Image 1 (cartoon, rainbow, N blue to C red):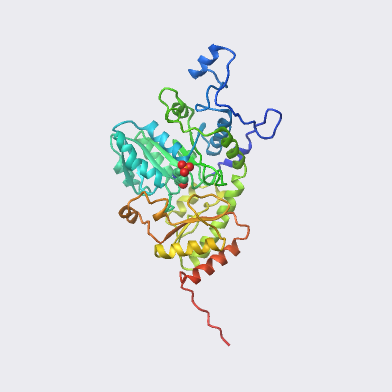
Image 2: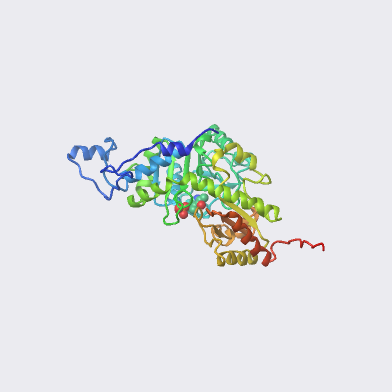
Length: 408
Ligand SMILES: *Cc1c(COP(=O)(O)O)cnc(C)c1O
């Protein structure tokens, strides 16, 4: 693909009111009008460039939204207080009572819980399928289906969705394809591959400093207007608004995303190769052994690599816990959920971020309890990191290392 997402971000210029190189932060929840007529027009959505109340929109949120829309190649975007705020408002905007969703079964635990436990209260039902099996997706569609939902790179199993194939199915059946692109910003551009709506948790790679939660919905102007509609817009009415101060801070961090993603990908590729060569069961989309390696290669914007997420399976939960504690003790990373930090983060998904998924279902989807999910950090010396991780694994007998017999 020849899409250049970082160029699109770079080409946007904003200045502060005194010529500052960063835009001024709009530190207000409400806005004055010179005339009552303009206030009325703004309320009706007919006064461009006027602001009314910051739950609806604010200059700082619009700047960040514009930059993220440029990154994804969509008409516009709406930033939200969290990734879940983006996901839940999109799904509740697209579905009403008795509607149906076809969703990947390997998705973020919170999204899974929302579709499994929360939306049934409104009689919105979800079929969870193996998203890499397009026939299974087609077979799950009913006359009530409105949405196909997936993650480009799934959490935590790192399955790769065939976004082009899913977009065709969606189009043919008059459905909306919603893609969560949190694991692969810049690397994959779902809207360019046919997705109707792209959502992110900004909490992860995009903000990258683990200091806030945030989210975004990227889509058509028409859809974003619907979300913000004062009468029936899910974002407006559920109040999932991001604060302006935070929007300004996320925008500044977005400026370095392209460099960070390249480093995350480079380090993850290095470690994945080493771990696999050491005989560990390693899952990373950049490895030829990954079942969807070619699919990812076909979809990706080459210069950003295969992302910073990888998993290894060390056999059982006890070993996984011992290894994570030892790696943390030696300052190789933190035992923490979340991802996209400068420091490597690791967790055992079965007992943490995917614990919303019942054990039996975890087993069915191949989520074993010795699985460790890594978000690989920005380490300058990844070779040293690898050697130290390897030492931990040897001490815990995770690697069955062949002893080299010295010949005298
Ligand atoms: C973290 C995450 C979310 C939820 O985002 P929050 O910002 O925590 O609300 C959704 N999807 C994926 C893939 C995530 O990793």
